[in-house]
Length: 251
Image (cartoon, rainbow, N blue to C red; front, top):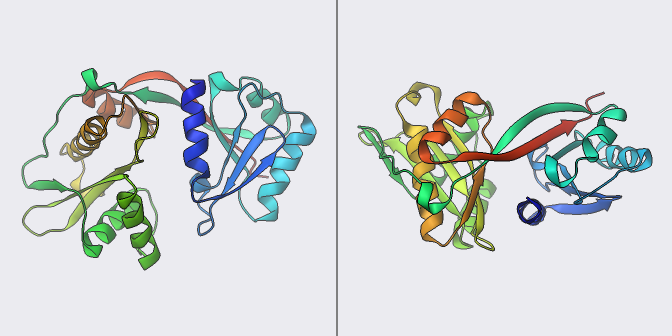
């Protein structure tokens, strides 16, 4: 778990401003206030004092951001009680799921749906818009977002677009980080409501998982949003391996 948490720290810091606040690495997105892009990770074995937690809270409030942390419970078990004692609350406790190459299950796209790596600006924008709407965000996609995704792909990242084979309408998408130290995360799997319950989510996850395995990843992980998603990822070959904890200070 420690090696995986170290990987998460590196990827969270990439492209973001960072600040070491006591035993926490705080990360701040330069172009988004999305709470899931602005959060801190405690150091392994962190035992935060009340003053450390207060300083972390202040670091996010100075930037008008929600104070948040995300971390693997086993790497810093004392961080949870310290944060809760200071008024932070648990957003969710979710399983971390892993899929080694030998466990992966190939799942084809359902009839009428095609999967492809987005290449044109329209394809990239369509994928991002579908993901945003699937997660309850506005559909508008900026040129900067498209450029950032293209740069991530050029740097070794992964993306898969699911679209209607007849109309070309984007149905959903997903991404994965570039493989580093044989490790990567599959994330952002989102499918528009009208395309759901057809197996597209499982097919997207399987396509991304196969792609990163083929690029040399041995440790492939993801975190499901809930039990329905966990059941889908289990079909692809992922299994729980630990717990991820998200906490925030809302008052």
